[in-house]
Amino acid sequence: MKVRLSSLMIFLIAVSCLVTGCGKKDTSSDELLIGLSMADLKEERWQRDRDMFKTAAEALGAKVIVQDASGDPNTQIQQCENMLVKGVKILVVIPKNADAAAPIVEKAHNQNVKVLCYDRVIANADVDLYVSFNNVRVGEIQAEEILKVVPKGNYLILLGDPGDKNAGMVHQGHMNVLQPAIDAGDVKIVHQQACDKWKREEAKRITDDALTKYKIDAIVASNDGTAAGAIAALEAAGLAGQIPVSGQDADLLNCQYIVQGKQTVTVYKPIRKIAEFSAKAAVAMIKGETVEGINAHVPNGKIDVPTVFLTPLPVTKDNIDETVIADGFHSRESIYQ
Ligand code: GAL
Image 1 (cartoon, rainbow, N blue to C red):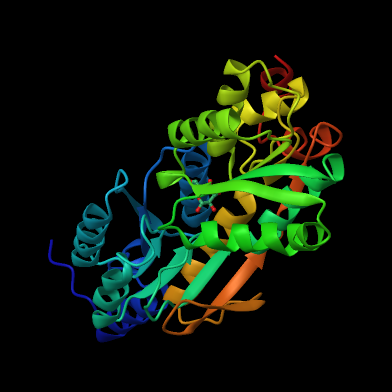
Image 2: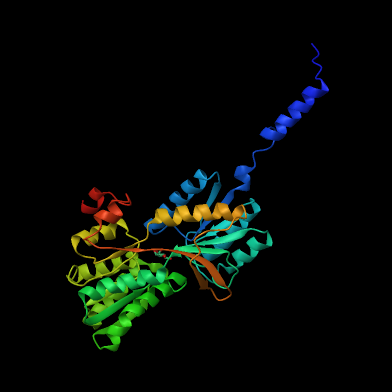
């Protein structure tokens, strides 16, 4: 049976398609395609960053391609190039090495793709947005909590990876707090050294060595991985729990150390906050919308990068329940075992 469509019906179908977008290829997920380039997944926190970012972005209708560079800066550049070929509309990058990652921004901009630096900034490049926790404040908190219990004495400082700009900002925070005590002759930094790639083994080796050379009264470690290395050295020397140690990231092992009295403080950076904020910002940037909340501009050697600094929190045995456990970051059972 032949069905003759009147011109009116054809018009009505056309109008309805126009209104409902029927037949239009659903490009929303292609349009909202995000490339997440991760330096590595070694520290526990980055696995959480990955999962929480992906969940938050997908809830906003985006699709996320995740690439793990396994610690290799060149791999990271190649992976970003591949994601650009796949048509990502923004690159969200945790650079393995701030300087080596600069070409990623140029390649992205050549294709009108923006770059959001997640927690670590890329140097010497026109980065579009940097979202992190105030890393100077991280270092200040570490030093404040250690100075409270060791107002006078010999300090060992374990710095982070020299290729990570965060490490330098954290140390700036250390010195903001310690310098007056040093000037007063109360505190002496008998040794400070960078731990390549934030490696726990490096921190242990440096601490082992320092313990043989100096009387150490306090250890300011720049993150929980290096803190764990220092605590391993203290355990070997029968000093664990006798020498205060700082950290950062609220890793499970270190939260256990805190309730056991082996670690004084970790700096908790609610990963959900940075992950959800960055996902929202990435989607807004794809749409050409402005990002609310810019509260700093961080010089990266080329420009003053528009930055959103979120607030880090000190976690000690006195408040671990109201922070890390209350947030569901770790269960009470896993921390108190
Ligand atoms: C830093 C980050 C810290 C620390 C370190 C190790 O860039 O700000 O949270 O964990 O990486 O991955």
